[in-house]
Length: 330
Ligand SMILES: CC(C)(COP(=O)(O)OP(=O)(O)OC[C@H]1O[C@@H](n2cnc3c(N)ncnc32)[C@H](O)[C@@H]1OP(=O)(O)O)[C@@H](O)C(=O)NCCC(=O)NCCS
Image 1: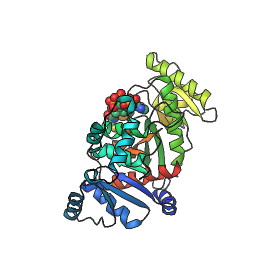
Image 2: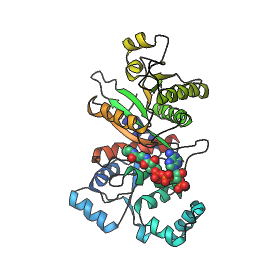
Image 3: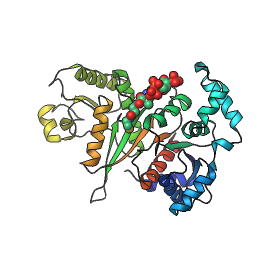
Image 4: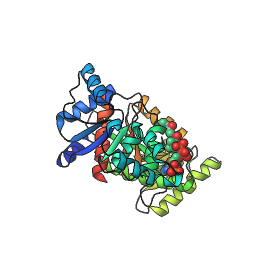
């Protein structure tokens, strides 16, 4: 069962530090003020201290107690530059270049996590997804055993009975055209994330074809990926290739693929590419009235998450809790 209450209770026992790379954005300040009032998550606001304080005052948010770190005045910048050069030595980055790159809050924030001064990072209120994700890919890097960083969305539809409907969808935000093997990894990571949110994953590899009803390269890709995933994760219920209706409707599944145990009951969806995934989750959000949380980045050595540039302060607050809870889970 998905619940912020449970996440907050866990965080209360072990409060985490979370970096916000856009420290003077009003939505970040709103979220930070709410977090500071409740003591389970310590925000680090990156940016010019005077500007941040002025912005908070102007919007009426109380950020007393927030740690503010200005890259221009950062006391450990020499150590950060050294570590950055070491991490990027294959690219031949000079200390001068490193200093310039680290003046950007997205790279600086990622280095705070890398140096262990924070547990997690949330950015993207003004940076694009690519500019939020790239420092994480380059500095935090893919965790051992994984070949890619990928992402999923958690979709929650509150129900009148109090039993929320919770789904997972991957990869809607990072890998543009995943290969079969990458899809297998995306499925494994999405299923792990789904479990954190209380989903018992039933995984569907989606396509425009159900068990060979249609033909094409992408149909083969999803069928092969599903087969490989079944072999790699024998304990997970996995099916593919499936059309979305066969994946979720018991009635359609009975007609199209009656032998499948997952069809009709899927709750974890693997899309063939980013176009399908990104459009798919937004349809669920805008027309299906699901709340969408993500993209949640998967496969990194530390939790770094990306906000939508259209986010609200309340969404920043929710994503901060999710990001910190992932740090706890790690
Ligand atoms: C993720 C993304 C930003 C990477 O783009 P990029 O920075 O131009 O990619 P590059 O190929 O230059 O790679 C940059 C670095 O990240 C690494 N990288 C790229 N994709 C990666 C992945 N999926 N997993 C792990 N590492 C990855 C590269 O190896 C490279 O590392 P290096 O600098 O140490 O050599 C790109 O795939 C992208 O734009 N995805 C779509 C994002 C988007 O628009 N989403 C929709 C909105 S939510």
